[in-house]
Length: 299
Image 1 (cartoon, rainbow, N blue to C red):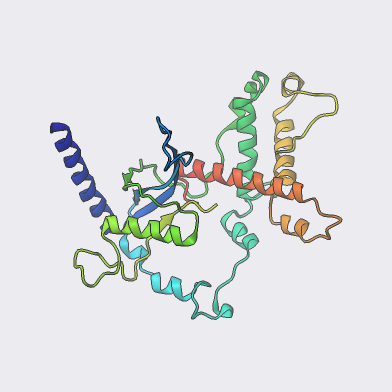
Image 2: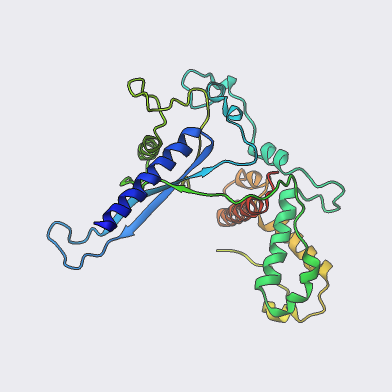
């Protein structure tokens, strides 16, 4: 009985915290699919093989750094300018190409002789970081020269807490199932549009942040060297490594020019190469975002 009472007390405390954080509207909802393989000790006729269960796990991440509720008071304007709005004419929807967006987010570094963008400079640093820390021992001698990537707009670091939501028996594999999962999470926090229930908080014109699960490599070589160990034992200079890293960034990671490659005639296209460029770009974007979040760089 004491165990049941403890579990009940913890559950009630968790529900109160979920509602308090959720109704502040100053939180990010994050969710992902959760697949569990439930092995049956004794096979049954009803469930002879279906042991994989598809669920959805969710959590809330309270927002910090003096973020105010009024900062999110633009839901109507967002919907008015959304291409998903059936009442909005396509010509009235603001358009910005991915190339222009990236150029605004990652402007070219001032006075950098290579002409690399801030994003490219991070990728260069990441290549060198991985080589020095995870490559052969011979590259460790360059550790003191590595330094840190340039900050764009750094704020003080603050530990992010989580408020776990109840897992739900929904597989978020379709738009409808994603909507159903979100509806369940909002129900847990008692946020939504329900005039008949005064306990339900109507977000009105406030935007709610949500992060969901939306979703081979080439190598450079030297003609006389076959392994990284051999390469690390040569008379390399730091400038040599920097030049190689810049070449990797410019030639082996997708940038605005990848669309030009894709638009070429089929006999000139190399789809496998294009996919590898984009794959490297996505991996490095994840690395860069993770690094920025962990070090307080909001630029």
